[in-house]
Amino acid sequence: MSERRRPMRATTGPRNVFAIRRAGVDDRLWTRLGTDGYHALRTLSWGQLTLVFLLIYLGLNAFFGLLLWVTDAAITGAEPGFWPRFYFSVQTMATIGYGGLSPDDWLSHAIVTLESFVGVVYTAVVTGVFYGKFSTPSARVAFSETCVVADIEGVPTLMFRCANARSTAIVEATVTFSLTREEVLADGETVRRIYDLPVRRRTSPMFGVSWVVYHPIDESSPMWGKGPEDFARERTMLIVTLTGIDDSLASSVHARHLWQADEIRFGYKFVDLFGTDADGQRFVDFSRIHEVKPAPLTLPGHPA
Image: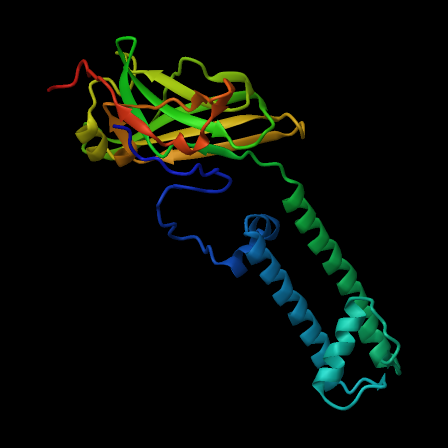
């Protein structure tokens, strides 16, 4: 009986990243904005990015409003207090100019001149970051929640499945499959090593629907002689990266995924995604991308 039928999820952002705490590095947002601002802004979600720019915008206007207030700069039509000057600052930075408020001495003109320049620069920064984030192409590729190991033509084979969630193909799609695990050296030191996993076909000229990637487990494979208990003990992880060119945008795109040791299932294979309806029309059911079923498996070199 098949298992794990779930809706397809496209991997468009970091998922299953290495769960390691970064010590000795200040990863707070405000620190990163000061030291690596563009990258920090580009890696925020749309909601976070909008909130950051809104807070900065309000902060700048509050600063200039306070400056106008404490210096007692003359503003025609403004009532006493901070808030009229705050709203005047908003009109100045946004170049709105309703006509009710205007600078009326050299000090207010000087502050307005400075604020106008800051407003032009801030608008350019916001426009550039939003446009850069909006225009960056991304692949909507869904990966199976598990890797499976089963006999394929008599050879134990590691497999994962991916699917293109868009209607346009990824041209010249290329897969890189790797294994990383902890190993103990002769002197007792524990190191984490990365091994390349050769696959039967690592390129696809037109990745349009789904793709099952196969790694034969032979004597040259780093998985030779390993079983589930070995994977758990060595904290094995499997990493895949997929790169290609979006057929509609003619731009490079990429996707990646990582599987932990407990997400590698032995003695299973994927069910078929394709079928034929009552009218004889072929179709693909993406909701079955994670679905697996029991399959024969022999593990040569692995003690029973």
